[in-house]
Length: 172
Image (cartoon, rainbow, N blue to C red; front, side):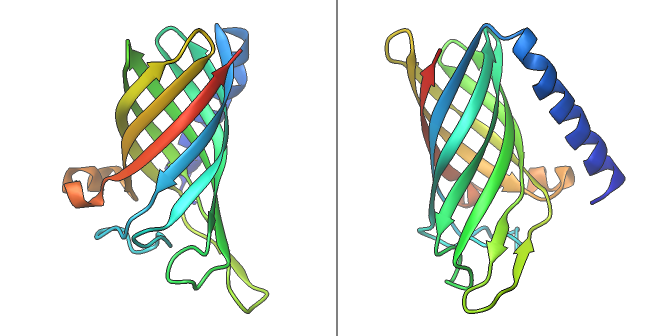
């Protein structure tokens, strides 16, 4: 892990740990994500049709929210892996129903038919979507997600590499 990645990760974790004192609202969300083969991102283990689901804890205020959680993807990739577990940290800015965010993630990959496992390098994602409130304590979210390895790669965006994610959030 590069020094720059360590610093960014430390900064993000510090902000997450400090946020509960400032939080207006907290929540738990059920996460769903449709993965596709990514043309420019070879180290990602996912192929077309892989589907992940998981949970996240949210710390919210009126301008946005932090999200820390994990996704589980059974039979990830071309079945080289038994499954993938993807811990993630996201930061969203919110304006009424519109969301824009950035996240960081890493995949844990146990290999099929062996006792070995592997971690992918940390990677980033950009997120853009909508969050629709359903009453005072429930929200539905849908968004496009674009994963990339380095910030210099974000300008290589292609619509074919965007994936779909959804969540149902219970706020308290």
